[in-house]
Image (cartoon, rainbow, N blue to C red; front, side, top):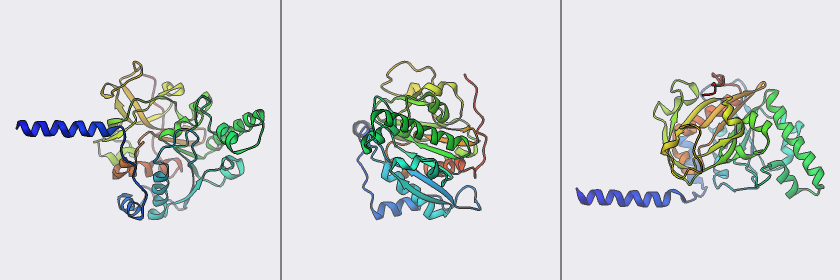
Amino acid sequence: MKISLVLGLLLLSLFNLHAQNLEAIPITDEWVAKMEQLIPSEPRVKSSVKRKILVFSKATGFDHWTIPHNIEILKSFGKKTNAFEIHVGFDIANFSKKNLRKYDAVVLNNSNPIGPKRNLFYDLLKNYSSLSEQEIIDQAATYETNLMDYVEKGGGLMILHGAIVVQNNSQRFSEMTGGSFDYHPKQQEIHIKEVDKNHPLIQAFNGKGFTHIDEPYFFKNAYFNYNFRPLLYFNVHEIEGLKHEAKNDINYVAWIKKHGKGRVFYSSPSHNAQSLYKPELLQFLMDGLQYVTNDLKVDDSPIKKP
């Protein structure tokens, strides 16, 4: 009994040591085939048209190693279900009004900028154009407006993990997305729970939530208006390494919301590709994609301030 207990504690210690730095998973044909087996065979709702999706995947800040994994997952969504036509973009020209009109939804795939401006459009123009400083500022504001107008007029916006930082210092952008990134403690095991087990967008979890290794994201700016319908959360008291005292014991990490005629879906999970091995998370992401394309119609009315 004692030996078993010691071995158990040793394994737990080793697990915790590696929890902050899970090994990167190479993308191989075998990995793609494995993931295609885990992906749902058909979407939750069958649409009469194939939805065109722009997956914008260029980051100028922290380079999340799961960016290419997310691309492959989304491409497999389209391949396996024939419900989505996936276009991967890296160039800022994707945010022109003309180009955005081609798509039913935009996915911001961990496309986070560098600080302190926290402005992806500014960074891309600064790094990849010969414009003057003032021209960069003006054009970056135009691209931000283009994306916001696109959603307001009926487009869909899906935001994955670190892409919540795209325009982190913009209050109006924060109001569209539902919040801005504040900080995260170290990577650790997090038990993610459903807010409303009966909501169609989280049926995939069967009332059990899920546990994985991730960065526990905390938010600021428009987040505390709670102008969204929360889907997933974690209990703050279960998290190690808080930077400051949290305002609430519940911290939401996934939500949906209306913005004008359009729809926004945010999912903080996940920082690591290992989380994608969970079929329920893959189903959740596909359901979120169907929500922003307006095929999966659900209650997205905002909750009230606590």
